Length: 160
Length: 160
DNA sequence: CAAAAATGGTTTGAAAGCAAACCAATTGCC
DNA sequence: GGCAATTGGTTTGCTTTCAAACCATTTTTG
Image (cartoon, rainbow over all chains, first blue to last red; front, top):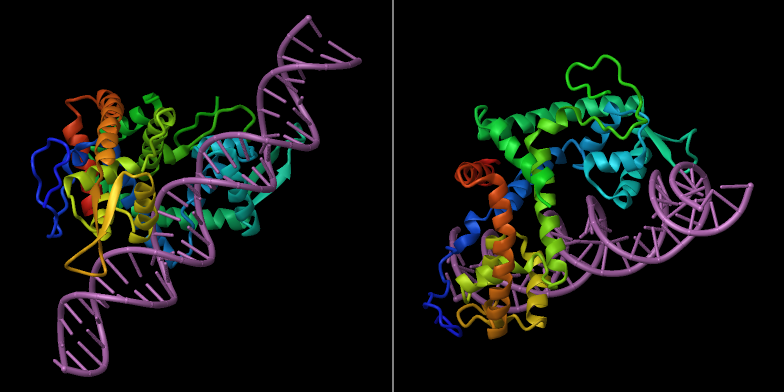
């Protein structure tokens, strides 16, 4: 039966498959994690056959938009630590999607740009991403999206 | 300078610290990831001194609410694979926070319950979690929270 | 009822991440 | 100009996670 070591009302032990989430189900951080998990999961699932790697899209996109940027700047763009950027860009370079050239103005740093192969790969990725994105957008609803984004961004930029 | 949000004709290479995110900044999945990252990061940061581990809270909470549940059920509750549950519960057991007993009705499975130490630890955690949660709630705003949660849950339960 | 399928749990291997330590180059400051 | 502090990048070590393979037990089914 229900161990009641602290003076708490008795609770039946679980034999059905019903799991009580209690207050968790109304906590924003908890639901944020689940939603992010789900979205990523679905994306990865659909990516499987086309062998896209999930982390690649944002990176390639930002490199396209900001050619010649450094790894540090890329890290800021995708919100990843510089030590995570190193293996990421090495992978992209190995796959022939980006080029890394030593900066002429600062010998410590490296500049990044897409190769032609990277450009076409990103274009393919974009088709796929837009498809996935459309699904999420539909679920949220066009009329709710701006407010939803506003609140996400509020968390991103103002929580600290 | 080159905050060129719509139809950018020329894209100068980056030398300032301005990084153009282009369409990324309005993609729900991208912002979902950032928001989840931020929230987790802030929580972990504040947890540091009190040596709470981020994954512990939800697990302990669910075990309290569903004493005697199995690892599979716990996994469903926190939305983690069973192979992630194994090291998690071993850690909790090692720390003396939960007890694992072989199920009497099914010799394959294990039942989980909090120890008295686990109960008090969870109570302490709860204080901390509620504090963090209040911050997020304030940011989102009481009037927006139900709708925000509704959309998160829609993504969680209906995206597939 | 026996064989096949499904289920609970562990192990192993791989992928992402962060943090901290480190090196080389650059910038700031007296 | 020279020394200290900062910055860009890499490496290493740790944590969290999933997937797949596997074992033992339980359930299903022919």
